[in-house]
Image (cartoon, rainbow over all chains, first blue to last red; front, side, top):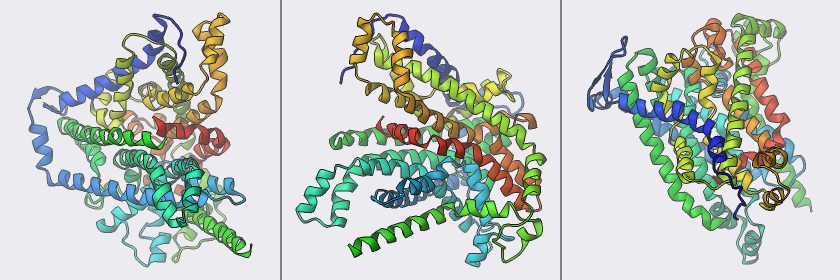
Length: 289
Length: 274
């Protein structure tokens, strides 16, 4: 559909000026400057810079702790996305039934969306604290947060729990937009409920799934910082220190500006890769609409 | 008939079970926030409300000056909402209602910012805020968030659904573009604006990394950092006070979310159609 437009030579530029000003000063300039700094050695106190080529990148990638963090982040994101999308789709399907009181159920199933990662961190810190955590008591295991192998599981559960509401909202909207005619005609052709779900509903949901895949990736990589800072502080012994936490420590605690800038560039490459994937797949979306 | 009744009952049961599992952490927090220290530390954990609610909530409020942090978070949230939504409205209006040179380029610039979340530019952003002497100021916590690709996209999507006959009609009536914007367009998109308020309030209220770096003094800290401070202040695992603090800080975003839920649900999904 073509929108009718106004004719005015200067007005659109004036309208865009505030946004563009903020974009340049607080987004483009800092991004470019961060990337530039990743090729420099930066003095921790004076801030004096000296060109260093790929020194920072070589340094961070020859650090076993960083490599561990790199692999950990990928596995963490994979778990958060997989579990998150699976459970939210299940809940969305339950919520898509025609029964009384569905609005009430919807509200109380999506409300953790309004809670912060830091709050999720505090809640799960309490639930799993070794002294008297309720879930330590019920599982008969006290070392959930003091053993690195299980601490990461607690972080995953907390992260999935916190983002469930967000995912349910999108799946629910998508489920409501699945054309009933397609389901009915499949039913007439003798397809059972399970077949109908996998062949028709699932296909119609795939654009939403891709969108949520991208959003949950950035959530897992970036937004879980507060959760981890409150729940484990990256520990025990670095077992929950994902890339963003590593960057924060290098930059803010250890004043290794050059390393931190290089780590930012690594994260940027990741975001570009995922966004590229989203654009590739959004082509497919057209067929379904 | 009988079979459907059983099916419906089963569905209700399943939904209630899901609600209980999902709400369990917060229900437990509520219970713990009323218990005395002795009750909290009992093992096996006692899961009944205690008698210490008033003391816990007062301690949580006063020990880290939660009131001041709530005020800061509220000011910042509304400062960002007002700046971001007005700027995004103007930008989305420009992109949908005008043809101009460089439109594609400028739109591309907005699009590219999706690749630049805070962590990707945090090193130099921190430096800029420091050079502007904006550390420990509201400006440092608000201004960098005023431009938003997501808000602009949501508004563009919404503007596109407004019938373009309205533009033609207002041109015939001699309306200027800004008269059309304020008198015709804005009143039509109220529920989308409501959704943007909810999304952005929750986003800003719940932010953690940037406020952690951009503030040092107690007076400028925000509620999310307050939770961490409460946990280190109440070192002896005084979970009653900590959980009371957690409950207090989750109330504002929850209230906004529940009160504005209908407009939020309508506008939120526009995001996935960008």
